[in-house]
Image 1: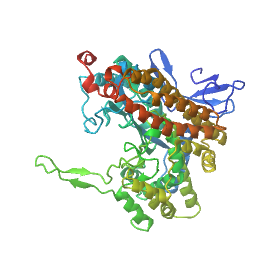
Image 2 (image 1 turned 90 degrees about the vertical axis):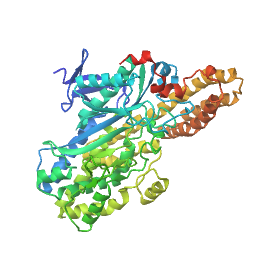
Image 3 (image 1 turned 120 degrees about the vertical axis):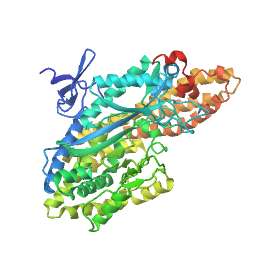
Image 4 (image 1 turned 135 degrees about the horizontal axis):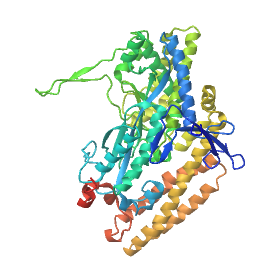
Length: 582
């Protein structure tokens, strides 16, 4: 019984005022939906963590509450649609991106060590413009392949099947991805995957970087959250053929899709809030991740069907496919699905699942899936209320589509600035500031949603907003202090040794110190976080440009910080001794 529950200090964790040293009790209970596992001599027991008064002090408790909310709402709606199921759950697959860099260079970069990203650093002469890294086979001449293979093996021993590994777009960027599984299990396992990769990398003379934007002007890293809804007896209700075969009805799928489209429209602000991490400040909208404008992609085939369905047309969706002739006599035509792949959309539908592409690589994605589950449960309940109030299912779904389909569904290029302006005019949720997005936690609409579904209380929402704002400010404070140290201890001596003028560097230090002091004098947490954001995204960026320009003028033998060229090109810089790790 001691393994199933316990008591500990709840005040030493970020808690947003829910705990204090004089009322510090925290209580853990085993999450029976996620497997216990053994690593080394330690038993790892996935657990929920709550206060003496039952407030959630963790990310898992709200996630499991949202699973329960979606289960109740999903069963209720499906029963009204003539399909009784034993239960509803969400399944996810997480595509984990990361960088591997030489550890000896990493250890000479205080910014990578302390902040996870390069706060200074001029671009290398070569970046990703040759498009020669993505999906290329991992080289046997570098330690990266052996490192990832060992991490896969360690994960497999814990029951984590990392099915794929491949290079990503940027130099030294990689990705691994597991099989799909239930949300709570996949999230627990993903946290272990990141830890194992970090630990394994050190054994191969490498450092793993999970921060969303560790290098300027090359792609950052994400964690694509592939999300689907299934019955507990194995039917994916986002797969039109599966749900039609299991239920005997073709009219369930369009109702489900109408509800999800409505959820994205009404609660896109919560989706943006869920991805508001400090690292995503530099990544969202940078032609490597979708912008902070929350639309959804359905593809022309499904969009046309739903428009006709809304207008009283065909009630059953039959996905079309087409044959692509390869133009090669020895190869048969390829059958391709109805949906293309829109990598610019924040939340595209891919045939059997939605892919939340804007999620940051370092995130614990519990909040992401808590939000997706909650807003979908709310939409299911709204449809069920309408049906119980006397509306036909089709009419209830059509009402949602009339409000949301033309507004929030967009199948075009989300990177195009003209399209972004058009979506903003439509009224699609657009929150450019990560700080503003965090503050959506305490919007009355959102607190009411979470409270109604019994996912988060208003006090828990307020605490989480405080925690995330404090985290944002703390991140910026670390980066500012690190930038000052880099300038004083590395840049100024190098510039002076080269006989160049260091006045701009010394002025930069004074500016950073003054702006940091101003941030700390702010009256409240929101004002402080907004000043931190300005300091980070404007002041620090402007100062970095000046210092990076100086780096290009200083002779290589006088520049003491490893350069992008030394950090980013394992294939070119690894030697035979390094390759022996294989």
